[in-house]
Length: 250
Image 1: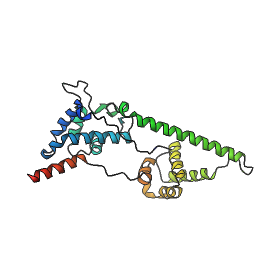
Image 2: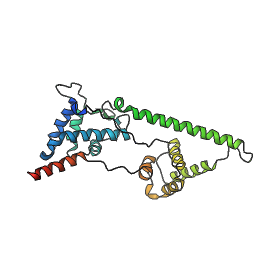
Image 3: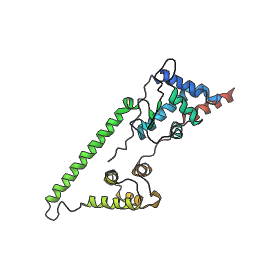
Image 4: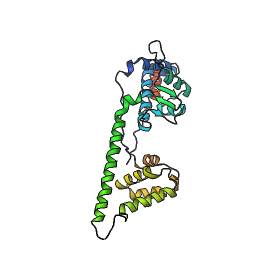
């Protein structure tokens, strides 16, 4: 089954002293409302951490395939012009002190890339791969155990589907009828995982619901099986609200 655990993004405690980060702060500070400018550092850190967190969840290799400036602005909770944010993220590495020219995000022929994301954040990727490998081996053992059990049962043969296999086959059929986008091993892995967690009856209703037509398994996982996410903090808005309160005291 695919891993749906939540992995924490790693943030170096020296980030606030990094020349690239300081340059990024200065670049976005120019685009902030006057009352929010004193909080540019907090806002900048919120933007960077939000992008890293979303990348870790959706693109752990650092390649932001299919992401547009609009997506990046939305994930970072930026409330200004998208192009202003992208300009800062792409060009904050080009200073008289830092000549690499590499910002927090780079642009390539394949799209946007989070700079050096793999070397800094690859430990969750390794854990995910180990989790997937453990699940694969567990599934192989279960198949072998069922095969041996059926061979030792005179009334059955290895060619007859187990009750579990029959349930999975029915779910695959329902998924096909409702145009669930995934096929093959990916679809089967998700279905088997949900069934193993005791969601067979719930899953049947989900797959028969026309409102879910055309969904993929990731969307179904997030909609029906993931624990509700805690409300994310909007650092930019918090800074602006705090600045307004300070202004009202004067």
